[in-house]
Length: 429
Image 1 (spheres, rainbow, N blue to C red):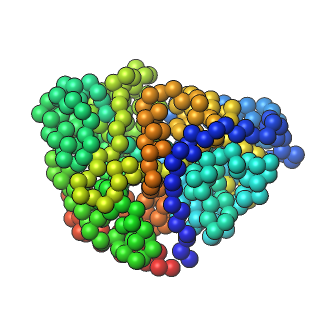
Image 2 (image 1 turned 120 degrees about the vertical axis):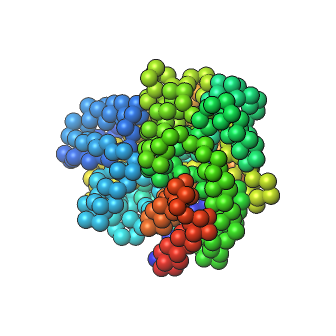
């Protein structure tokens, strides 16, 4: 059964006025309960912040035990798929919403929390567009705790060394920056293509710039195809970049953390990554501070003649979904995590970037994250990551196929056809 597409338009609601949770503090669960929580925050500040939140909740609710399992991003996706197939979902787990969550909901594998969100107006305290990613056919299956966009993170000192005086605003300028960096003996771009999903950001952004919202809508609803010109051209332009050999040595086997570690310690000059990059790089850096003031941000360059607006963005949310048999304590714990006080603290620590609880954005002080927020507010179309919005089988094919361009083993046309073949099978159901 095809799921209903959720078009995410965040606009100025990311800076909505503060709406506090009902003043009840932590709502104590009445029965003894154990909550199995899976998350992907391997590094600080997220890892420690999540542990502290769990400890604080358990201290206030001694009848609740929270067991935390931390998994690397791709390992989490793989393991979650396996346990879902067995019908044994964790009580609370990382989710990006979209098609993957909708399929789990259709199979009865996740808990409907619509009534929980209505209690005491909890749902009204959360950014509505972000919350919409976790809703399908009138029901909610999760809550978002952070939202943001993918963009270009760069080393200002490397740009200065290479004589680049302004950040690229179009694809031609980005390719010129790659040439200038290589001429200065600086690796232009870091990418962890061993994990596949970081590389899919490049292809999707180029599809967004070439085709805009209309191209994706057509392909998704089957009024068009993923072999239409914008998607083939996205592959052609990505191949143009790959042919310049801009990436670090061993990029095809590198993980996301491998790539971010290099960037954090002054290696490559750029990386295309989400709003979580500064915090992750800081935790992976040798000095514990990352690039500091040398780290900058700019939006993905426009494509001359493309149908997409320069303000269109690729992004999404990090959130929590709940297994079908999750105890009430799991939802109550999430309610605590999405309180204004907790989210404001997470925003100030670089954990919730950007926070989804209305008013918690007052905790943000990092100028780069403020820039991310401005880009988010300027957007009229925000596309959720393809590997999360599309059905799981199609999303996996996107990641696998796009890796073929990075590896030089598939043409842009072949990549588009592989994705279309999968979409024709999965989206037609």
